Structure formats: structure tokens, C-alpha cells
Image (cartoon, rainbow, N blue to C red):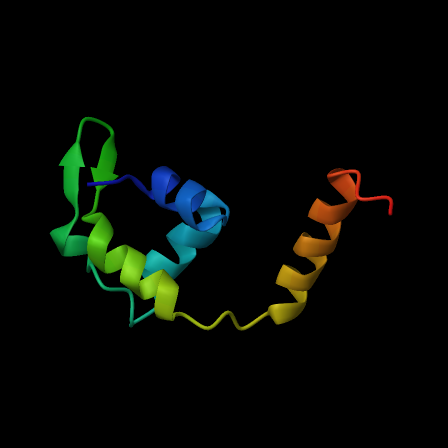
Length: 79
């Protein structure tokens, strides 16, 4: 079981983006009614969420290209 913040960390998205997908994407694998509340946080099973993100095709590919460029620059790849 993982929280939305942990999902965001694992799939390299912001917590806000994961929340958007969880609430608005009809293909999101775990409906909100099935989330388990533990303390202040909701937990979801990781396996179906992982499969969802592995199969998901990002709609904004430019974002990922920019992110990859930024990471290369931050990594000090000066060659």
C-alpha cells in the first residue's frame, strides 16, 4: 500500500499531478471509494497503480523532454 505522495515519488511526477490523474482519469485503476484511509492519508495498492503508470502514454511529451534535458544539465554532463 502506498500514499499519493509515495506514488508521485516512484513515478517521478508531482503529488498534485498524481492527484489530478487519480481524481479525473477514468482509467485510473483504483476508484477513490476503494482507497483506504490510514490516519490523515489515503493508501492504495501499488501493483495496479504501477501497471497503470507503466501503460500510460503521457499526453505532454515535451514536458518529459525538457525534464530530461534539465537533468542532464544538472548532472554536470559537460562533454
